Image (cartoon, rainbow, N blue to C red):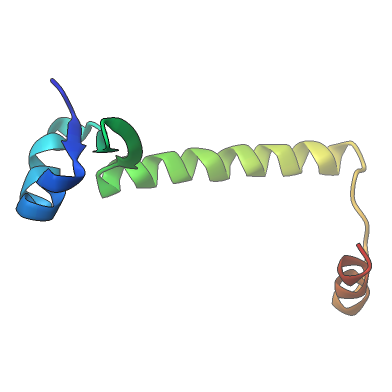
Length: 85
């Protein structure tokens, strides 16, 4: 199934075309001048990707803690160090 949506289709058909193209939890792509420019996801698909991203960040953080790659400091000192970067 072609899940491309032209900018003109989006303008004239709105959410109707988005619903049609993203059925079965598939992505759709909005094209501008024949080139894919934007990706459209169902909220379920978006939430799933966000959850995977957060799980990866949590695993990375747990690895850093186990490896001793962290500092214990006050919020004030942390903010000051960020301003000095």
